[in-house]
Length: 110
Length: 120
Image (tube, rainbow over all chains, first blue to last red):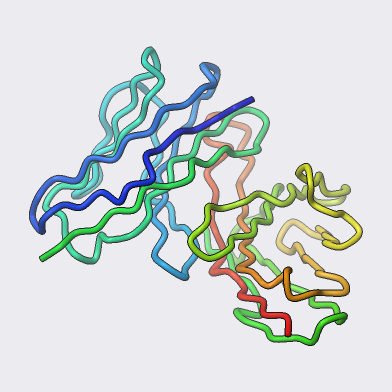
């Protein structure tokens, strides 16, 4: 059974700090990984996708993928209170059915 | 690009009535759409996977006769909650993915804004 594990948190960081969110997955065959952000009462929105080992940067966000260790992480630099949300890690594959983690709650305090 | 809409955004209905929720991909053709349910402060739960022109595939524990899914075109999928009861009150979210044929890009999902259902 495909699984994605995330620490539910909450992860609390001060404004301006780097927030580090981590995720491990069970299926070695997975090729695509995604990070979604979900504000309370809203639907998820895609932040980052990553398919290859290494880092992928987009603005203040950096996704890191290590297929050998089966983990994917998301770094948020210069964290802002508006980044406070639940972050969902997801993995995909040829079956088109995604597997989501339970999400990590991030709180950025002023 | 890649915008998904849902209608209605919220609905209140009486117990025993049926409610239809529409999910549309506005600027792309979605070969696969997914329906999720989320209870307050709980994780996203996949209900069913819907492919255009074929029957939906329901997750274990989801009653297919209660949650009717129709995916009549590449841009529209509907979820009908039949004979709704208070325990069906939840946040229903659809998402659509683009099957570009270039795996691993196939699984990038775009979520609709969700529909909040309250059954009295």
